[in-house]
Length: 127
Image: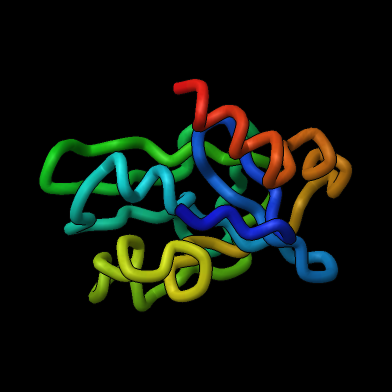
């Protein structure tokens, strides 16, 4: 299972990649394995505000519908339109092709409160 070291992770299995002022957000390899084959992704609109710990969208798999929880607060500035036509990207490439949204963070220091790769690995090993 892949846990890229350059990303930060939430307890809800979302990842964050900081690129300047922008934060890319998606779900982890662990989460997509647990969900099974993803068949639909629902994302917010560009311009929407998201709040850390609150739902911002959902993924539907062959097993269930699961909410996506914002790891940080901010404004959605981009969504991954390709996921609408290719939700299977979440299973194939959770960290590259399947980023879900780009957010301008209200406070970038929120990212520091997320887990690093080692902490996330420890958390999922204890589940």
